[in-house]
Image (cartoon, rainbow, N blue to C red; front, top):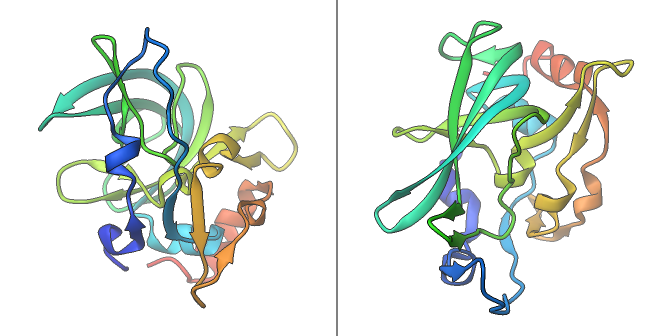
Length: 194
C-alpha cells in the first residue's frame, strides 16, 4: 500500500485550512487537492477497515493549531477489518477540517459528515488515528433499504479533488459512479484486498 502522504501531491493547507471566521463574509478562494484516483477495487484493497453505518456524532477539535473533526459511526455492516469492528459498536475516525469556536478550517476535497447520515467508509490508520482513505473518495452514501444496498459517491467532496490516474493524466470525478455494496464485496472476494 502506498503511504497516504505520497498519494497527495498537493494538500491545499495554505488555502484549504486557512482559518476563516464563519460568521463573517470573507471570500474563499476555490482550490482543489490533487490525489491519486482510487476506484472501488483500489479502495477495497488499500483500506484497513471498511464499515457502513449511521453517523452518531461529529466532534470538532484542535490539534497543533489545526481543526479536525472526529466522526463517531455506529457500525451496521463490517466488510473488512484489521481490528475488531463488530456490528453495533462505534468506530471513531478523524477528518481534516471543521468548525470550532466560530473558526472554520476546510480542506478542498475532504468529506464532511452530518449526524444521522448513512455512509460506507474506507479507512486507513496512519499510526495515530483512523482516517478516510483518499479524502472524499473514501466516503460513500449508503442506502441499505435500496435493492443492492446502493452506494453513492460523495459528490460535494469529490468536487474539491483533482484526481490523477496511474498514467499521470486527470481522471474526471464522474468516474466515481453509484455501485451496489456487492461491488465492494466482489473486490474483496477476488483477492484484491490484502
